[in-house]
Amino acid sequence: MSLQTVARQFVDLCNQGKNFDVMESMYAPDIVSVEATGEQVAGKVPVIEKSRRWGAANTINSEKVRGPFFDSVEGNGNAGQFAVHFTFEVTPKATGKRTTLEEVGVYTVKDDKITREQFFYEDAR
Image (tube, rainbow, N blue to C red):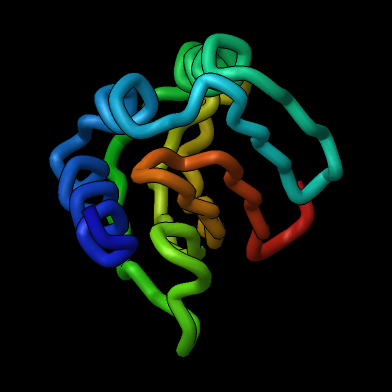
């Protein structure tokens, strides 16, 4: 699969609300997830659990994923990166106050699997 194919499949599945399908099928066993705060989580199971905890703390009212966006060079062989723009309408269960969250995710792909994700937030959280 090409980097573009992986990235487009990622966006299509996320826009169908199948984020956990993406994680289960597209993440490498040794994926590293980096939040804008600098927090890092390594390993497929811990990364998915981090997302499950976030999902349990928030009601996701809607999600829109734009992209993928590529740099001008795919990289060596089947390695490369793509970025996506996320817009979430969420209601944190702790506050009950609906809010919009925007972030950019940059994904590194090697051998058809996502090996790293790094997030950049619109505002400090």
